[in-house]
Length: 201
Length: 394
Image 1 (cartoon, chains in turn blue, brown):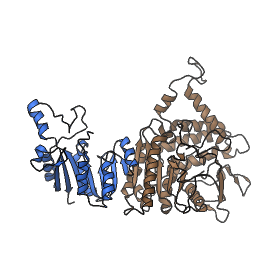
Image 2: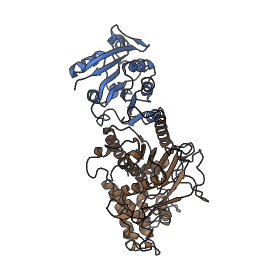
Image 3: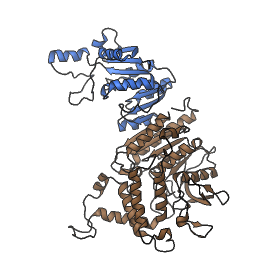
Image 4: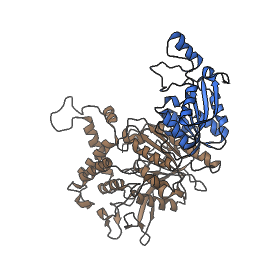
């Protein structure tokens, strides 16, 4: 993954949303950097789910609890509200059934933190409008034939999704990849959206 | 199982080791087996590596497979071949003997120093043969518990095993929750499936149809070598994978340039099986093979209910490892186990290691297993030294 797409800034913003000593499940935890950060700074009890075998070794090395599974099927085993937070950072766009995964995440977690790349950033729109090409940017570096992303959405699309699913957006933070929080027209200028979600079950 | 292909490991060995013996359950205090029958006295052969610390909190129990023994690491005096898990146990290795006291015991029912069908029945002064009561995995673990009590180990820091060893570790976690801090379950299962039973049954039939078997009463006479060799050949095939066999042997011919058009050995794989089997009959008792394979087939943790209900009292932390090419204990079975553990809010890490070695992978894939085991144990040790976790159930 392009390091510019997931600067530690993301992780710090997420850490800021999390209460100390809470129980956290990170879906698609990768090498476990975020969980390690949260363990260190927030004394959380963390569990990761990750599909990549090599990443599992990195997570174990960091002293994390990690399960080798895919996100789409990895949640069914957990009891209701088992976790204080379920995190889906930069992974939702790669799952097969994002709607089911979010609903499941809201079942096993009291709150859900979602981080999504904004596919309607101005640079992407510019490429579609002027060049007539599917956008390839620094933040979305893949070609149509090799992208791991199955879902392409904007921040607005995500707000709409939450609305129709009855999901409450407790907090939303839009970020640029220059470590800045974007307040002005985030759907145009933000590269990433981070959301704190809840749902009354 | 095949230990010959273990990769050489640069780390040092525990060196020269010797088997020790522990006897318990003398008459009047016999062990009540799962079947309701009683057995005693019981002897267990065991080996230890590393030093037990003062509060006896650094003990790790290693549990072995169907045909293995207590000799997991180091060298017996005069031997050139090390124990069966040499790559995993020793100074600086996954089970680090600089930190941990590693105990490895031979199971009840075996022929490698512990009480089994070849042992002398003190009431008749003859080998038990088939008069030995049936042994189950639970009985093997109950005997291990006696050994642990004898050594003053009230709680194992970890109990680890592959294949049948994993089943033993699982029983510890379920039956003796206070006596186990963590379990490492490798290439294992929670119940023997129809395919596993069927494969064992072919082996048992091979032994029992050997005219030398004599209903198990062959001690001091000719052993049922043909039957046992056949059982071992079948077993060996199940421990490998399509790919590992093809890579190792392909269609290579043995001692000839062309096919012989007769029923002598043409292929290297035929010769290999014969060689492994003839080695095996020298070192293993046919009746033990029957008893232990049946113990495996009887194993079903969910026999009287839902698997998830079995872990209600379990406290252990878990590491579950499986291998992509293992068709004897396929990964999906480990994953079912992981799901049941998660459903009980237990702390469980799991990894499916990409390997072509089939079931034997747990003896061969030392590097990847070591990474997982070492870091798992390091984490638990760190958590322990920082006091009990505020929320031990996760």
